[in-house]
Structure formats: C-alpha cells, structure tokens
Length: 520
Image (cartoon, rainbow, N blue to C red; front, side, top):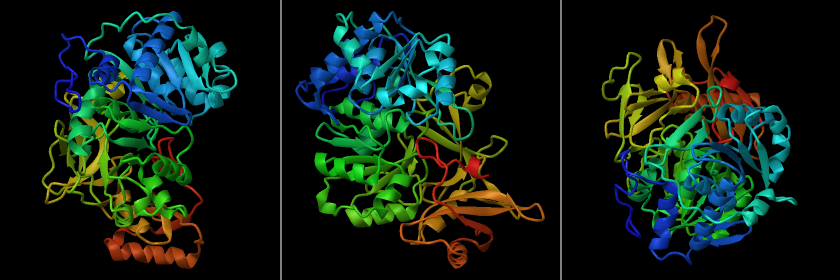
C-alpha cells in the first residue's frame, strides 16, 4: 500500500498470485494515513469526509450482498455525479461485484443494448433517467431489478438505510475483472471494456503523481463525468490515491456551472475537454485570473487546438496539459508536462508506457513520418466483452491499437493527425482533418470546426468543413471565403476546405468527441 502522501510503484500489485482489492486500497490508505476527518467529496448537497466515505462504501457492499448479488456478477450504474456514485462503485468492487459504469446521456435503446450485453442483474439509475429504463425489467430477462437514486422516491437511499452489517471485502486478485466501461461509440457500437483491480491505482501512480504532482492539499474538479474513463481517474482514483478533495457536479458542465464551482470551491486542478475550454474562453462570464485558484489544467478526449491552449494560458497564467488516453488504456498515457508544454502536440509518453508508430503493414515508421499509434502499459483492458474479433485486432499482444494517427517531431513530441479512419488523401497526399480544423479554429470568428472528406465532381476526395461560429458572428459567403483563405495562409494550399458550411452545433458523443462519421 502506498505511503500516506506519496505514490509508489507497487501499491497495486500486478502479480496474479497476490490478493488485492482496489476499493480497500483506495479508501483504506486514507484512513490509515489519519485522514478520516478530511473532506473527500463535495457535491451539490454537501461534504463527505473520508471516514464517511469508508462507511458508505462498506454499507453499499452490504446492500448489494443483501440484494442477492454474488462476486463476479454485474450491476449497471447510470448515475449523475453525486457522492453516492463513488460509494456504490467502490462498494461493488469491495464486494467483488463488477460495476458497469455507463454514461448518462444515452437513449433507451442504448441502455437496453448495454443491459442485455452486460447481463447486469441490477441497474442503478438517477431519477431523471428512470424513464429511459422504464421498460427494461420487463423486456430484458437478465435484469432483475431497477433501483432509482435521488428524487422523491429515493430507492437507493432506502436500501442503504436498510443494509445489514458489512461482511468484509471480497478476496479478489490484482488482475481479475474489477469494472467495465463502455467505449463511447464514436466509431460504431459501444464495446464493454473490461478492466482489472490493479489498474485504478496504477493510473494514479504513473500519471497523476509524476505528471500532475497531485497531493493531499489539492482540490480537484473534473468537468468530464465519472462514467468517462478520463473522469473516473480525475475524480476517483487520482484524488483517493493521495487524499485530495474532489468537487462533483451533477448538472451539465456549462460555462456558468463550471465557473461557479471553480470560484466557490477554489479548485487547484481542473480537468476539461477541448470543446469545453473553447466555450469557457468564449463565455461572457469568463472570470479574471485572480478570481480562481488554479495551478494546473488538463485536456483529453480530442486533441487540444494550439490556439485554445495559448489563449487560456495568456488569460489565466495556467497551462493546459493536453494528453491522450482511451477507454481501453483507462487514462492518459501520452501527455505534455508542466514546464514543458508545447501547444499543438500531445506531449511525450508517460513513464511506464511505451508507444510506437507503425505503417499499414505493422512496421515502425521513420522519424517524422505519419503512423498509427500503438501503446503498451500496465493499465490496458483485458478484452472487449463478447467481442472476440475486435479484441484480437485491438489488443495485439502487449500493444493496444489506438486507431489514432501521429507523427513525432524532431524534439520527440507527438503531433496528433486524426483518426486512422478520418484521414483524407488529397491528390495522393495524406491530409489530417485535425490540422485543418486547428487552422480554422485559430480564426477569431470560429468557435468549433470539423473536417471530413467529400468527393468532388470527378470523384476525388477533398476536405469539407463544418463550422460553428462564435456568438455574435453570422455566416455568409464572404466569411466562408475568408476562412478558406485563412487556412491557405496557415497550411499547404491543397489542404484548404473546398466546401464550408456554417452549422449551429457539431454532432458529438456524450463525452464530447466529434462524430465525424455522422458528418460524412
């Protein structure tokens, strides 16, 4: 187990012959360190100490056992970010039950698919989502019970009140299945991604400690929700690993809601995504730097446009550390670092992970050339549930195939060049949609942009841009031509968008990733 205020490799044993329970470790290390009275979570209803969190986790474990659930069986959790979510998630893990954490912005059909695919016996859902699950018990044979959290009839609270005594933690192992996350579905049907007990603490040891320098006196706030792999590390495994305080927000992360929490709780670390940072900078509620207590910000989900990073740093005097992670790797494995930020890049490999760039034949590419990013590290998922074919193509021995295209610059920084299935070949030359998008976003009239391929009258693929303008700007033919010329001045002329369409919004997944396949 880690020392009270530090993270040391070995806190989460990797060897299968050694028992290890992630919930016992992450909660228990804070009690052992004497942080029982320290605030663990602040949500919309109040504060929860580490001692209260420990009791809540134990009660949740007892409640789940009382429902007849046994180790290795699954529950599905579709809940907004309140303290009950980490209590239930960790309580399941303590009991050896496997929580399947899903996002809260999906349709009834999406949830029905995940319930049937996971064969979860019980689903726990926030009251506003109950209608999305209303017919699930009657139509999905493996689902035995639906438990509603919050609202006028808080069934979860009642069950926790009735829970019996805690029977102790399940005798789990470091490399046995611990929890699932479903992939975002940006490239097709969501896939149940299976993670092991050791991985939660391991992401904290490799990224949160060495890169973020997270410590017990930090107050962290993640706009990315707990159901997102990025948010799960930000708001659960990272702060619990060191005894920091976490701010949770149930509502949607609008600029107003985000700034309200940053001001009120004096957060020192903020975790966002590129789309949100763009919206925050464009907000009329943008606070002055001295109104906030930020020391560090991070971004993931999609590549951060250099212009957004530079404008954020110029306004707040705080860098955004852009990085890339994935549901399959659980958190960030390639990142910029404090004092070494190079905007327009995703930084360098996080210690403990290895990356390589390969061509279409699987051979390593030469320095400076474009290749598909593969990553190896201790937090990789074991497989996709019920999807052997995709498991075999994604998890290739020690390497996880990301589907992201990168090149490495002369200083060793990795530059994102789009998804493998998003790359365009214009005049026989690869064009990165992300590169064109970043050029468009650097224009002061543009808030967001997405670029896809479109065939011209000769059947040749050329870039097409969809642009969301900043408030107060109006689309016109003249502005479209201005933006095309703007791209030509920043990039090789053949990369400019031949067509440019102004739209109110871009299609995105629930985690904020642009769904270019819908635009195509």
